[in-house]
Length: 56
Image (tube, rainbow, N blue to C red):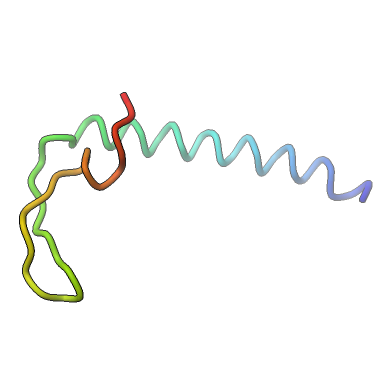
């Protein structure tokens, strides 16, 4: 347990950085259209904001 505690703090910091980077990417490309797929079949076009949630 003593070895795990610092690793969890580092992992938490890494996850927060990854989340911030993902939100930045989503905001940058929020209006970029993407091909929608449902079970490998065509579906309605979507954008990154719909895919990633409504952060921002």
